[in-house]
Image (cartoon, rainbow, N blue to C red; front, side, top):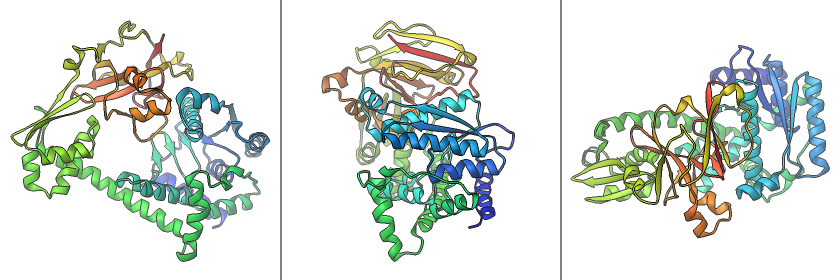
Length: 451
């Protein structure tokens, strides 16, 4: 692939995926100093975008970490772009959040990228994932067990994160850098098979190349087809859900679903309808096989009677006991915890990296009916800030090395919308969610601080 072909391929991906605009708004680009990131900033600069590079120094590889930092500075100077450098204490984050080294580094990286995005009023954060990375993600998800969304692997855009290089290979990247006269550094830890992704990269994909022609290109094609299927699947689920759901009464006609659809299709549709409320596939299976019963997940009670499933918010009932307390975010919270609440203009937004503090877009909260502080319940999930998927609250608390009694005593801040759906916003004092973040569109924001 020639230099012109490489740049055309990336430009086409940006255009077709609507990844960036040409209005001059800056783009934050991760620059580790490795080949992928150097090619990323080089090609985006060549295409005329206003690039601001960001380098994370995790200090995990001694002198090699500082070598990477210095090389990133040289690349930025060569390309004439601004470079932000941030030093991180990964062991401190691991201890505070109960995360693995890989998870802690990733969380720190993306939290900083998001802060830069907001501070610089950038249009996106670009990262250098390429074709082989996509193949590895597909295989990882498939081996761990996943559905259609997992098999679609990484999207060209995930929120404000964009991946313009998914259509090019590592060989294409190195060829482009050679043609441009740009050097890169290698991370020695990539040679270790300690991490599953490294094993796939170093052993599995090379073995596949012995039997198949360009397997990463074939897997990339597969992920694109699955992503197209996912679009159809999502559209079909939304349309079918409307046929069986009486939204005014919050009732799902289970009997009609079973009469009109194959059993597996009806079960899957019910799961997709209930999943946003915290129900899982086991719940859906049990509901489909039961004649009647009451099923609970998160803050929703689902009552099955006469082939009809009625959904009700359990908040008011729970608030009468010790488990849940309805609170207001218009004033300080004094019971059951002391949490200060401050609303300010976004001009005053200077976030601190402290798990005892949470920030929310005040304007985005208009659809929330009320807020609840309660203890965790079986099956509770949240989407942690900086992550695309959801995680079980129980797993987050386990990684924090809490005892069973400490887990039961933990507090969650949840938002209940007008339809009774509950969203976990904050494992108080430990992890914030990705919901209602402060973005460039934010006008006013809330600061919640655990005292």
